[in-house]
Length: 257
Length: 191
Image (cartoon, rainbow over all chains, first blue to last red; front, side, top):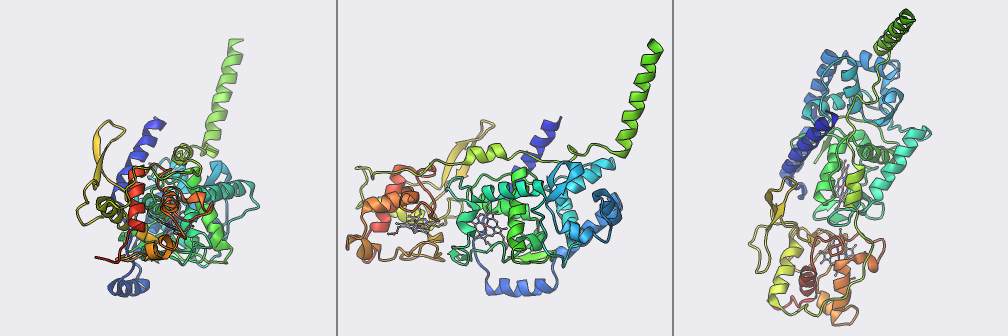
């Protein structure tokens, strides 16, 4: 049974990936004007709001979330700023999406797929609760430290059709250089951990950090690994520490090219 | 005897039921698909030395044309102009379900990192390869074998290279590496 569900999840992952065509060209003046306008009126605000409604109506809102996580509502923002993090009763370092699924299970509700618009909206809302908090991964927590190390390894491992690693294009000695009209971003400086989920203009949709990672994997011919896998969560932990080193704050939803 | 067992069983049932209510096991309640195997299969071999094959004809205009095409394009789906002789835009691949699927052929997209004559939107991660013949080949700073190795597997010359590996990954074959080499070292001044 479990296997069937898993392979279904894989299939839908694959199907969505087919849709994700290239993203090569930089902003035109028209794009830039649109970007400016969207900065004032980020289309993803709607998703955040919608995510809040879903959480409220189907799972009991922030109060239920805080209770589920075993923190006070007052401490909730800071706690959320530490995701992906080790949640003892889930037995792993997990993302906010997996927390949502576990809450659903506990309340006898149907699990929302990790890779679905509904889940992305819920995540965006929950993460936005931590707005203005510093990115805050706790590396003194042993499970999170292990995830950090796995994330670093995954980030550095060259693989796929062109023998590239994340680090091939995002290492300190190369950021700012131009790859086919695209300046290579410093993932700490652009605060990936603080700005995703974000509205992605080139995709006209709300995207999560792990979904964004998949975009780079696909473009650079690295085998695209599934959202929610240990390695994906670990990548997110590692990338979050890059923003943390630069004292970046959380500001959701982000707006990206 | 029997009643004692019954009593025990009922207590056990009661205990497990009540513990399920106050602390349901949530460690398997969410999705965590496996990626470890996928990554393992996706790793690629260590750096490898190559010798440019004798069959490599660097003056063949068709080879140069193919090299040029692959240099400036990412894949067959994105490439606008028709592919030159000896090259295709799509390849047929058997999927896991046994069905043959048309897949875009991958090209080098070398302009993503290198400027060269006629490049549009070239990147600057790698050195400019403009006037390569005059600057590097005619001056004996480089030879075709160096260029061939660089494209096939740049890690031999620079273990920490940012450049893509093209032959060791199996994305391209020897002839295609020859085509790239022929294009890079070709004289692009007369047109």
